[in-house]
Amino acid sequence: MKKNIRQKYLNQLEEYSSKVIQYIMPGGGGKNPSHPYKKLPKELCDDEEFMLESIEIDDAECFKFASQRLKNQKNFVLQAMPYVNARYEDLSSVLKSDIDVIKAGRGNDFKYFGKNILNDKNKIYEIFKNSKNKDFKSYKLIPIKIRSDVDFFIKLLTIPNQTSQQLACFGICLLWATNKVINSKKIINTALKREPSSLEYLSKKTQSDKKILDYVLKKAGFLPDHIEKKLLKKKPFIMKKIKHDTGHIYEDLDNKFKNDKDIAFSAVKINPNKNYDLLPKKFKNDPKFLIKLVNSIKKNQWVQLSVGASEVCENVCDDLKKFSHLDIVKNTLKKIKKFTKIN
Image (cartoon, rainbow, N blue to C red; front, side, top):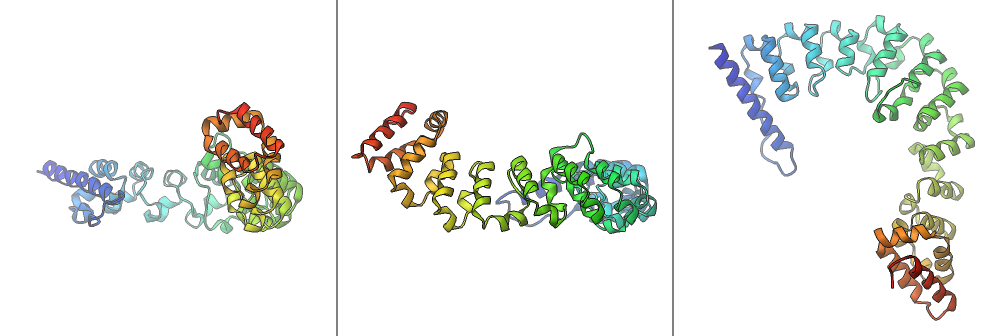
């Protein structure tokens, strides 16, 4: 009899999971389905084998319906926590402070971890190493002694064998650190070498250092948003940025910079495929500008353009043909024809 009841609910759960997928799909519409375990018999809520089988079906959304006994059982919780919908926040205070559960459940709030972990650098290291997004709350609860330890943060910043997603978040641990740490040259060099975007978490003094900004821009192609926003009001920075991000920024510039001849020329030179169409008309009606642009684009760029973006070549030629009565323009058109399939 119990077997039949188990199977009944498992079948309902399978059907529910299918409906959820349909509901969240674009254009799915309809009514958000209700979870079938809301009225689950108590004996099944406390049945470990049944609940684990259910957890596999709905990515642990049903974990919240498990009995309190199971939620306090470490082995059961460890098997449930890796699933998307198992909530670490719903666990007992004892399990919330268990390092194995924290790692399995992606715990990210130090206020739940307890003093044993807060005062143990090795345990904090293990938790940070395991985390995917590295974004932790209540980090000011970490004792000041640890938050002032340069060597500890060097260790955090150099954890080996991390995914690209983890690396992108590495520098966030510097939010925990005292000024002594974030102003340390050793920390600055280590953080920026490992992940340039860590500049976001360093001091304002470091963020305004010209050599450091140039290094990060060259290495990453971008600066933290709040820094770039200010610098993009200055022409010298825009000229550097265009070079290091291969001209992708041109379309987002203010009109006064799009109309700057130096900026326009650099943007199209480095990325004609993307930026030629974005040029203001005054440049497309300027034969000197167009000739200079054609002469600056390398042979291999013309070949690539003619194969992958022939429309750009055609547009350049069409704009030049308006001045075909000029000998220098005729020679320039011949040059384009020589390297491309454009007639």
